[in-house]
Image 1: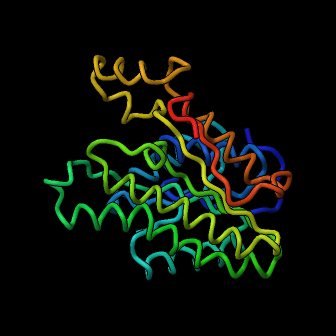
Image 2: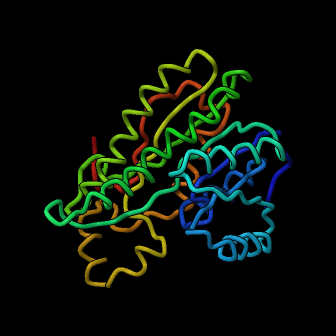
Length: 252
């Protein structure tokens, strides 16, 4: 499954989930030393089970534990990776959560939790890898946003705001580091066939599909292929931009 090493190290936060797992596998196929970052409330067994399963498929993917909404935990995570594998060349900020409800019912805690996990974490992780990338003169930072950052979504003011904030962060940082061989981009998936979507009642799934011009949900592998392109050396002229992968659900 995995090609010969290209000598580069890639970290994917939320790396054991549906989209994150496929990103990890796709990067491994391109020869990266891939580390799947995970937190999952400290469920180490769950992450280790995932690692064993992908190992059976031929993928040698390492694990790194860290709470991406906690600065000190992020520091420990990156320090451990640097010590074992060397500095990170590709960072994929994929970790995130939802806590859906309307604004009139949303608690400050629900707002803070989603902003911290989906947006503040992107700053933490980027801040911790950017100086090594600058020193090397190469880096790829890929932030996984959402179609709901672009169009909004009923009951997701916190999530939509966090993912939209990611776009502004991406554009600003891209300008700061462009001259040093580092690119910073976002990928905005639409509804993708993960366990979360599979758990949606069939009648609701059909309603969602009516709003997707291509007439189907995306596949995690399709999102992963966009990420591997942005991670490559051949994508060096693309920075500060967003690639929408939503089946035509939202066109900007």
